[in-house]
Image (tube, rainbow over the protein chains, first blue to last red):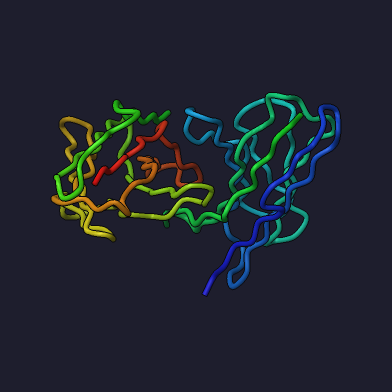
Length: 111
Length: 114
């Protein structure tokens, strides 16, 4: 069966510091991969999605970037964090028209 | 482009009462529709999905939803809620011609009281 791992679970970072969140999927190959952000009271915002290695689509221009160096690895990064980057970050995977399967999320607090 | 509106940000209800969480969508093309549940500090779990066929869809935990194309709605219902149903519920839409993206509503917080 497929599993998705996301880490760390919580992270506290100062403003201006870099960020790297990692997500990996096991038990499948060539999945679609997604990064969502959930800010308090604002639902889920799609940040990036990828349909293959090195293929990244950005939904919202901002301080973040994503990379897919391997088929089942999806990384969310920032060179310099802003206060507004605080939130709950969720990684997910899917195939074609199947539902998304989510990781347990990373709670990021930028201080 | 697609969009999803969840009109109720919070729905308080007593245990064993029925509940309906409303979801309306906008799309110029046919869509797939989903409901997800999120418990505190966790990821999202799929409750149910509508891809095609019967407009009444049954999901886990006793929830069901009805797809109404004319009203562009996909409301979630449960005839009798439990304390354990307290969570955030998200409606989501995916276009048939662009199955890469899933667009979520802003969520509805269901609070079940004893």
